[in-house]
Length: 147
Picture (cartoon, rainbow, N blue to C red):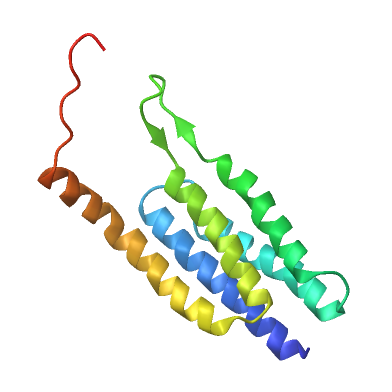
């Protein structure tokens, strides 16, 4: 694998991660451009190392990255004191997804990357609006007293 190709893969992982991080930052979340950019690049490095050296099984490495990063994402999930609200799930999902995109960059799955990143952005940009609209159209029934 040539140096230019490695740089392209790493750069795309950084760009995709940073772009997802910008969305989180614009929503005033603690996980932003730097964190998700680093998650993308880190995942790409691990996968590239295996692919470039030709030793080991890339699928096992990807599995390890996705599982390990899941624990990192779990660190941003917060439950309210009454236990009825959970915050940080979208950010945790972004951390996990960024690792997946980074891994895809490592194995140069360009079609998958260029299809998935716009879909993810659409979900992040319009998903909240859709949820609010949906809840306005079909509000939840009030809980009966005594529960």
